[in-house]
Image 1 (cartoon, rainbow, N blue to C red):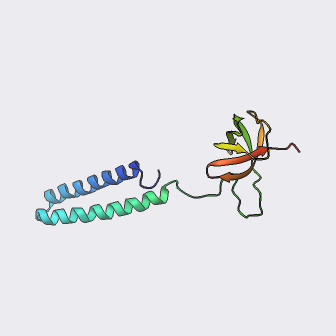
Image 2: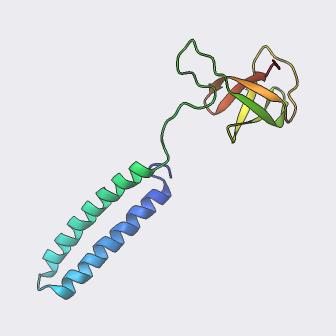
Image 3: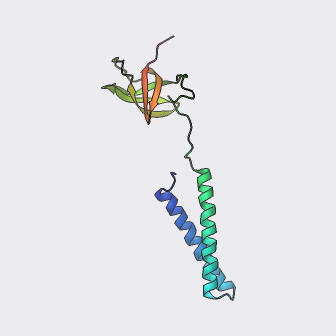
Length: 139
């Protein structure tokens, strides 16, 4: 779930409705507080509940930044990952699978070799969500 997506807001809205509505009804039925006091307590509990829910959702959300295929830890270090061509390269662009993930890919500028499905490729670098690849040389 990405931060502030429609699902995030739906969860916050549902939490607010349940917390606020439930508190309001229970306090009206079980106490002798005035409606104004019950309303203030309900609003306070909704704010606290939403804050806690936002912290929990932020903690468990899958938006962690990690070094991915083709990224370099250090500028002098070349990626060593090997992938497999998933979709035939046409005009230097295709799709590769690496570590169980399928990525858009393009061939290095100095390569005009046709990459076919099932062929091994070496990840040279990553440009956003596109991997730059070259044919993996058999050792």
